[in-house]
Length: 120
Image (cartoon, rainbow, N blue to C red; front, side, top):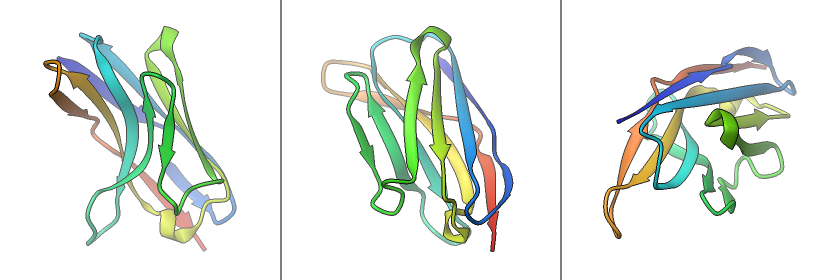
């Protein structure tokens, strides 16, 4: 079992910055990837950024050039630095960790979510 705890959300004006953190604990091994997703009211959850165990990254087009995902392996923590925030970035942000359960399958763990609100 893996537990994920997010922090760093809040209210910020458009153009501002926030840094989200996600601390993982428990049986942390055979990790496929860690990432951030978000869900705005009335919308489906969407991928924001993902960081593979090998170090490759992938970002949603809407956040490229503004958001950066990174990790501190020693602290089992993944970060999402969000700059130049826009009102459309307002959502609940969820941390995700994918752990291999077999050679070809993996299990998704989710944090409880942290609210990010960007005012215009």
